[in-house]
Image 1 (cartoon, rainbow, N blue to C red):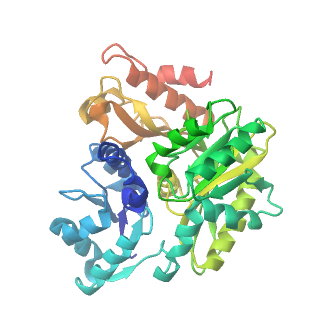
Image 2 (cartoon, rainbow, N blue to C red):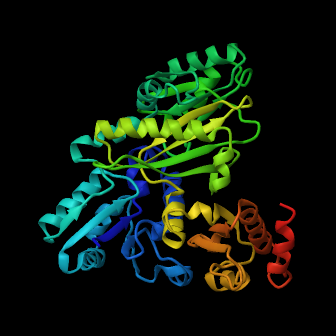
Length: 454
């Protein structure tokens, strides 16, 4: 088996976009991304070197669930480019060379393929004498395919022609090059009584989106002034599209991987957890296969994956979607990279095999309030009965993000044999953490009572 180095280079992939903000916002965004980078531990094989942005407090549980063969590293002085950090950090570079072993061969698996990743591969080859394989990256000359399809404009130009017969569609929309034209298009929507959404052409996690409702702005000048204060809408094209309302808050997503010489594979279908427009996690369960939007989403992903393969794209991608009040599925964007949920598929496959949906449902949650548990010792003590593997129980909780414990936030996966049981564990963990330490006694006995009422 070829050694793997998995790299959580999230900020690096969107640095040009994220750097449009002021320094305080950039730093806050960098820290938020760094806090989420710990999920890299569950990417790929269990025998690997995982590289993220900082130390991990919950390594104890990671080892306990079967990842003791995963080595971990982070730069002493992290920058916005993790791939270049590896080259500039002697200890990380030595770890990378050591990971290759006697075969002197290593696979690089990034969050997203970037030009800096190619630089890292070149240096490991030329300066360190390694054979570097990029199994989840397109050839360098085809990187434009990823960049183009991940842009809002490229998505709107290319994807609609691939959706015939799938049942999926895109919202009505237009693109433009100036804020003034964006205002004109927004007014066109609002005069028709429609809410619209203004999006930067190349963005990340909905940052910079501007929702415009009828009668929201007193004048075109008022709206233009608001847009001029939005740093993410500068220096790029803008897409203005109809806002699709989902009364039931149904936001499905599908992830797939495209290989150079095998048929594309759907890795997982999930239901995203979104509150006030913010992504907070996702649900993965066989139960989703019974949802009315499921077949249209999988059909669209399969068709698009085939076209991406023809264009020369290699690697992960996902499609985010929304279901309106009539049940119509709308695709909202394509992300040509790993996602905030890629670790769910890789982790579940490692623990329960490729057919894991026959055995478990999983809920990933990224922003759980920790109450008084502000370090790993307090957290592990409070959640001892829930931390997977749990004695006498098939479900439990796996911590995925602990870097932000001091600020009172935690990321974890709730696991149950059924979606109902996973939801019960998710709720029980939240209640336990939000009760004062020493006063809560939410054990598995009360969890068992709770799951019957979910």
